[in-house]
Length: 272
Ligand code: FES
Image (cartoon, rainbow, N blue to C red; front, top):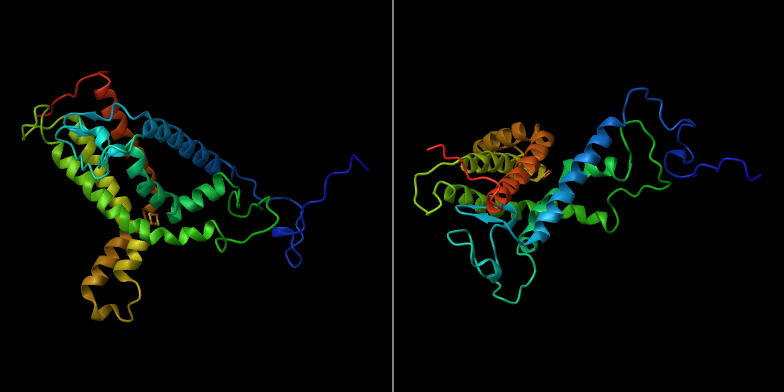
């Protein structure tokens, strides 16, 4: 009959052998709040960072370079005097230089264990929350293309280390004034300092990092240094979600700060 509701799909949580519960969830709390907030937060960052990455302008205000554009690998950011400009590609690259470098932090975050959980829940409802049935009929996990590529996370972790090192270099350069004299500290220096601490903390709290320093050992007692490093990585790892968000916000703030300086919205207040 045309008025009958459609049959729910027979796979997923409705597969034979699963408990026959008709309700999508028995949870009575506001379980949708967290995926909704994650959705809004990640979407806001994606919109902002896409705009800034393609803008190809206002990414340098001496002595600060936007973290989205560093290091600059093409000739079209030659005017970034005193900035981290390594013109590896020459003049044939005509697009925004941010696109050359952002693939690394983007790949690192996209394949991150925490972000995977966040966007699987918030964007794909797979599942939307604990004990809430997902709408999909089948589930193959991360065993097939393209999700099998999530296994590349450890390689993105390796790439994240030089990226963080370059942002550290930029933070050191931020201790100069607009004439590139050393011994200056502006509000921007502070913004960069907070950002680089959070970037390193996020990077070193990575699950791959923890495995790299302490994994595959039979006896911790025979590897005291690695054991010590592993406990440090573990302590950071407990806060991985917090650090993922804090560093995401701080990197956007650092970029926004440079944008506002570069567009002349205000001048950098000096601290000393
Ligand atoms: Fe999140 Fe590696 S697990 S960065």
